[in-house]
Length: 99
Image (cartoon, rainbow, N blue to C red; front, top):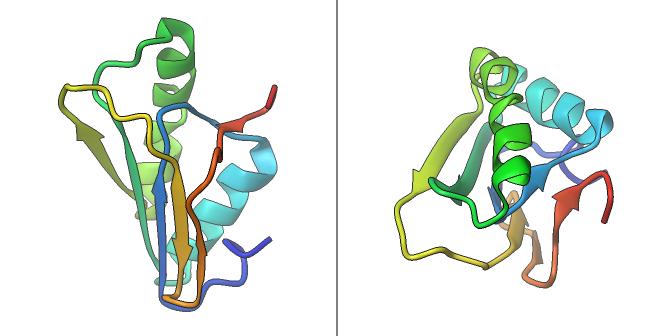
C-alpha cells in the first residue's frame, strides 16, 4: 500500500472515512515515522453513520500524529490521495470497508 511506503507526506480527502484496519494501521505507522499525514473530511456528513464511524477512529489517529481537518459546509464529495508528491489518485476513492 502506498500509504505504508510514504516518506514525506500523505494527503487524503474523502467524504466517507471508514477505512479497513490495515489502512488505519498504515496511516498511524506513517505518522509515527514522521510522515506528515493529513486527512480532510466533512464536518457534517450526509451519511450520519459513516460520519460517526469515521469519528470513532480519530483518537487513535490523532494520538499517532495524523492531522485531521473537518471541512465546513457545503458538503465536499471530492476524493483524493496524494503520497510524497509522486503518487496521486483523484477518482471515486471511498475509504470504507464496504466499498
